[in-house]
Length: 172
Image (cartoon, rainbow, N blue to C red):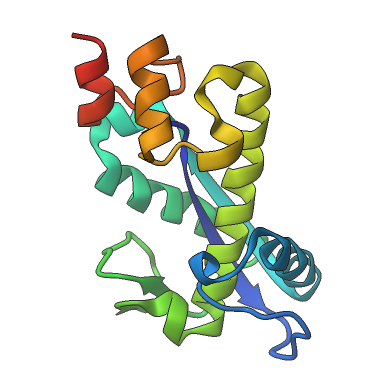
């Protein structure tokens, strides 16, 4: 309900990791942070960020595709092929393969999901410093009960996604 959508792209230079590389949602924040550091040292990484105003303008699906395309463009080398989590059709010159639940099936997708999640979580911690009344340090902008209550009490912040129903309803 708040903050940007963030995508990661990785080209792994090694498949040998000492940390767990798995779906970012399955790892604790501490494990994600350790995995993030190892991925950054063993991969070429690109990050794509699309802000909440763009999400509101073009919708979350298209914003996610845009973030993925930006992440790929931000790699400092061209990938030979792209594998994507889900059924997202990206504009890319190289071969594309979509894998449903890819972050559980592909080491590359799992690594990219960790990069994206840690990057976004760190951004939301900075937003928490700016807007502490929303509790972004706890829920990272997702639609939890606590976040919805804070939204009802304080109204939306500048980083809320006004096209999302709970945010829109809080402005009525």
